[in-house]
Length: 530
Ligand code: SIN
Image (tube, rainbow, N blue to C red):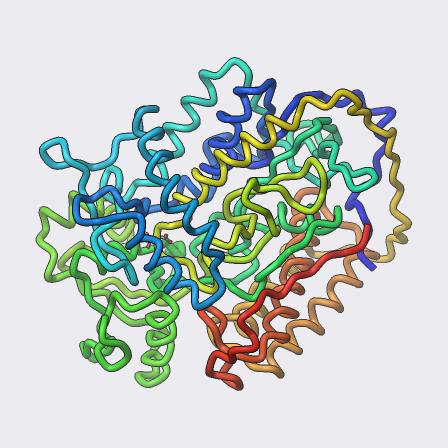
């Protein structure tokens, strides 16, 4: 049985900070939410590292938005629905593609510099988009331009307080109302609390649960886990998207090689130089992501190789330098000259479509608790996210979360109960947290990866259950120990959902049930009774 809170505390002895809207997480979703919530009152942004650090910062490809002359929100809508393999919500998708246009224009008015030619926005192409629809910044540095713009706006906003290096241990929760968070100050080693009538979770994803991932160190599923412990519903947890092309070189980080490289003419060849994608899908390299990822794995097996190669020789040196300066630099650090040299790549965990279930106003089933961005499941991605729809989602639903949380933050009778919690935990042993973390990542990669099968999924479920029990009687290091417990909790839900879904759909592929089954055109949700 998991404890309700991961740490002991006594709120009456803590002198907590108070604000109107508390935002946890500082990526594009959280910062957009903070800016809009500040129209209604005071806001505090809590982040476990520095304000600039987030998944957004690392995003390369761009933002999908129907601003090109030959495009329309209806076409973007159709492509999104069709990528989602039957599980997208039509209303959230309509909101995404229509409101996305306003949010992008708003970001531009805040100073975001997207790449242009003669003053006109440039658009690139990514998989499963019917046309060139992806705007980008500084070539492949789109995420960093967006993050920089939003951080600047937040820092200039006197109503927003930034609280860095504070790890959110758990949500404070009383009678189905969220009333803030207990945090761990990583600088002082002390527990603190922030009290607020409205709390927005925007903590990003869960890629670190896997051995191979494009996600930064901080993507440890914290937001999903703390919401789940507080009684929130999590849904669609079996849908982890694997990005087809991550740099695969011994000693190099698993660095994302953006899909826009294929959008601009990069092709995939196997170790024998054979362009294999034409055997798998008529759209070749621009087939949907799940198709390309599985084709790569299949071709690696056929050719007895750990990787395939991304060939950029059809892209001129001038264009490669302009469009992919970051990829060129990182590859250069490991001796690869772009575009002359082929890049060794293979798939890795990239983006979780599931998360905290929210409605159109980003409300969860817990009063006062909102969620937006990757931590949430708004219904826009279904079983398979369309490339570059996630930054758009973070802005559209970040805006909606900020407005809803701000509007509902002026509660006349908001009182906080003096919650006190003591874990009944017998410490029996020491625990090498890093070792369990690495083992979890390997098990998830092997058993709950791109290809799944009943016996592997059961193996993952059983071993995670064992580790969960074991950790309850172990001495853990603070932040790493909290992260590990969160990762175990969410990994188990992912394995459980994948085991339950006896079909293949979108990013979830079961070798023992390789086809979609109409009666499975539904969502799998989980919640704890609190
Ligand atoms: C990429 O640049 O390939 C990633 C874009 C995305 O995942 O949306």
